[in-house]
Length: 311
Image 1: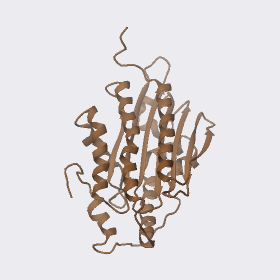
Image 2: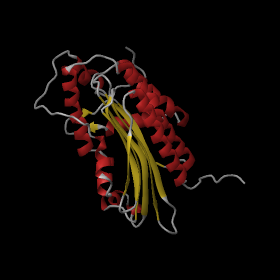
Image 3: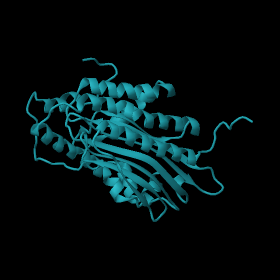
Image 4: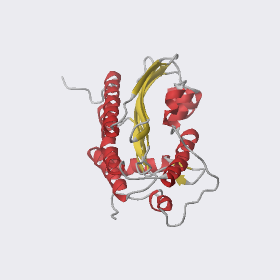
């Protein structure tokens, strides 16, 4: 008997992949750090579901790295969700995903974020409403053309099997999403961002989500290896701490995942794991002209086509 053209979502299969992904990424990051291991914290959510948070702190390379798995459920969604998606009203829901944020110690190693997630809302007698989302993005403090090209070339390569238009579409979505409107400034150099993915069918959509999840370390770890031994001092550290402030501002003001997690009664400690361990703000800061710090604003934060440009 042939498989159905549009098979129903396999929730168990998605969960198995996400737990495996969390374990593999944690091991790869711990190996790259070489000085610390992840500690695991399992938790339950009173309204339904739970998760496991894994956090590495005080490493040789990573000042803090968190890789969270969550699988939460509920009888209803908050009004903020159903206002934009009225078809979700009156449905129970499940949301699961892996989300990670890495804050390196060395300012020449960029911060990075990635997540892959699955959402499904169900109601007896009706077809489920479901979609995948996710992506990854890079936030350098000191820009390197080689790293930026590698990051985007890797993103484009993993998108290619799914269509020529996939990378340009999700690259633009990432550029638009990770943008601090109140500062008219990008958070970093982008990457991929996608949401509401449920076409052409579950199998294809799931395959793309897996490609993004599996491709993150391929994109990020070579950059870590190139930069983690570069010498740095107080000037670089102070600029790193200042730029981390932009990360905090975005996550608390604009990030939809943070808002959804808090509104659905998620575990606050895990949701705010994305915050850097140390950060500073400085009134009216302006980098010195023609300095490496100024180059970040001039050459890397403005949107660029990293696939076509050369040094």
